Length: 284
Image (cartoon, rainbow, N blue to C red; front, side, top):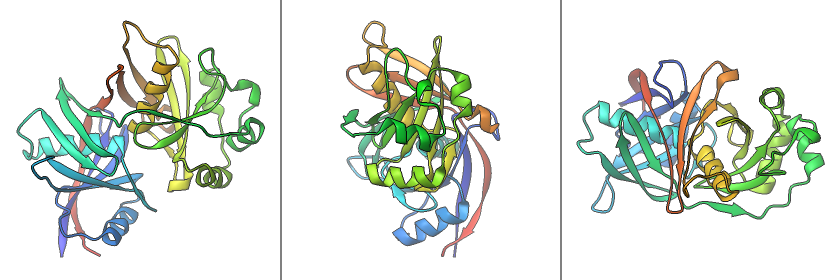
């Protein structure tokens, strides 16, 4: 038996940019093991599997890396709902998706798919800065910005270590030991590390999640949502609101632009997407 499957580049308006996600729009009847095998075969950072909705939500979506299921994935959500609209499976501009992170709102605003993140949480985790800097391949003196002196763990659905660095050059030069970072991520129960710097009004970032089988990602929605919540709570806001584009994937030659908007009520993450591949896959 075969089912249709797609590859969609998210957080970009250009094919072969952004972050690619696999999307299966009809996953009804698949087992968890089948979805994991398909995700492993796709060899993308995440593959989304779409199930029918109910009276409480429009679609259920489950997300798999090549090694495990995760509660939520921002870029795969943007890819999924962009594709569903492209295929004519969506007829309205506001929906609800069911995920393992809860029921989350989806909106089509202008030409972007915008998703509501889970409520932000700052997690109290003890991080040894010397050891962490060694693992990340960065001089300890290059860690920290005016708003935030060191790494912290934040979540809007998935827990990431937010790593502030002093400059774009320092960000570009980060070279983690992926094996040690994977072990540390499991030890601290986080997805990975979201390194970032502020360049005037722009936010530049890189994301590392080797514990989930992803050494580096070109665009991460949930991580940038958590980053937005973190910066908002550090006081980076105007009229009680913060909005910015996060620029990611540029040194991977897969440039991505992730729209983030934070208020005291919710965290929004959005972007554009381009379908680059459609085909059929054998069911394992």
